[in-house]
Length: 470
Image (cartoon, rainbow, N blue to C red):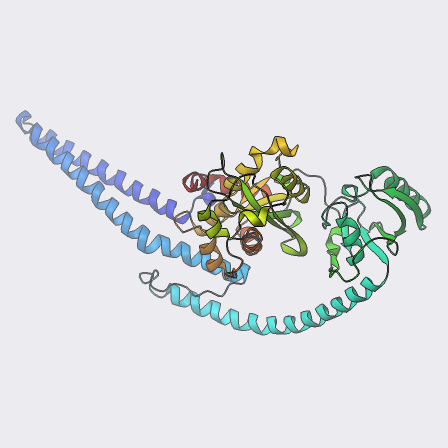
């Protein structure tokens, strides 16, 4: 229990104890003095002296506590958060020496240690960057080569979840739903033929050919299932030579081979943060009243194993069914002409709901954005029962409730840059929020919060922040 008490709360309790002890001493001293005096007419004087001494003692201790909290406790928390950001999120911001001016040599020592570590990290990072650049070039060459081959390839783990898809497969999957790592194959293909082929593959250990339809029933495919060996799942191939796929459309080779090792079906609260899929989203709206205004744009990105999955994005304008006020257009630069012919909220909401399957939904001030979606849940024909994580509350957990928790402040604190052209666009803000999330996840783990349930338990302590924001 004591580990859950923050530094500032511990200090506050210490001063409360000091005040209580001082008041008790004053009261006892006055009682002893009154008993020795033995004169009833002195009662009023002793009571007045007692009240004044108690009041002045408490006021003095409260004043000292306020000074101590502002000049000692808060700066110590800021330095601790800054050091964690440097150690676990890779930020390079300097310690604010002005706020730490009463801490003696502590801030200077912390700055010196982190500067030295940063020098060593920079040298290592340069070597890693050179090797990463070489691997990226090899990946681009492989992607281009695979794009020329009219065969779609999908690697699937034993739980029938997608581990890898190439550019051709991305085009095939996109005809059904957004291609997504860790998504169930049954979000795209009918389940029975795939499971029958997999049972035959497990029994014979040899390649299996079979036919399957899309879950929409609008496409039919001839597929081949090949074993990967050692129980790691299977490879699906599909001849796309006859499919109507734009050959010049740039599509990445997307993969995460760690997904070959399937995790259990634990409830979200029990799952490690490293095993979770997050869908980070943002909306632009006609105004700030969720009960009457409407969404005009939804942007979302996917985060898997602490990394943003490049290419897996949702970015759609939404027809709000009402004029967009000029004041709102000045903020997000979306006009009535731009949303004409765009999907309505029912269609766009269903697409986002599908994009967020089996994921934790993340947003900055999530209650605001989710209120718009939940209001139209019936029209969408969906239930918004996803686990929700709010980066405002994560910021409060890591940096203290007294700090500023706007998206701009959080990006500045963690070294995330939002290009001005993308600020106040749904996808731009979602991308920035996702980068912030990726920076905070290792900081949360370093604080001992390793499961989703651990994080939610901590964020609930700061729920009042969201009430104040909204």
